[in-house]
Length: 222
Image (cartoon, rainbow, N blue to C red; front, side, top):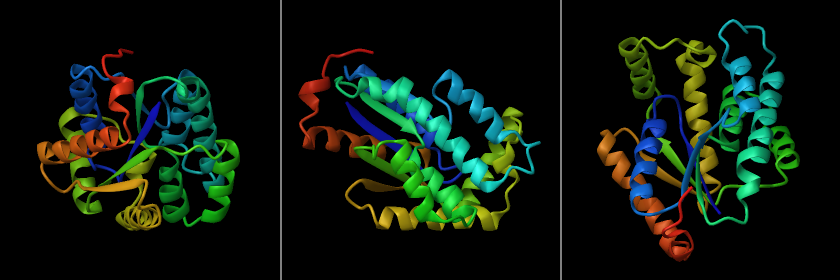
């Protein structure tokens, strides 16, 4: 199994890129599973609804951390760990870096404690590759509000956070990427959609070929 994660601030475009990427890789004969967090499984999706419910204004920040961790653990048990010995590519929209960026840097919680909790909960499991969609928070938030207006989507609890919060999250991501250069590759997500997509596609193809995964996953289907 190859486990790849997409990370980035709100409006970075990673979710849309993931949908198109899965289609292209699938057409090339690669066995790809696309999933997301928080969510990805029945129980985890229910926890997601609790976390993002905009009426939960009094939620304690550490409660928020533990809910994310609980959703992630359940997701791992149901969707990721069973595929450890498979020949599939699993691409997840957000993973443990999100908790460090949003709750650690964004909420100003103790990052060492968050890391320790996640290490214990996930048995030190980490992605093989993480792609960070680097977008200016102001641009990302404009995209979010525009999309929600055009598609009439409801706002969730994170949409209510101010620009200062999202700036802290963004700087947090930059710091995480700086300290994990071997795992995290940075893509300029301020570009147009197709430009970002091609850059992400090339990074993943290079990673697959470099690690000799191509022969393992070719012509397999999910």
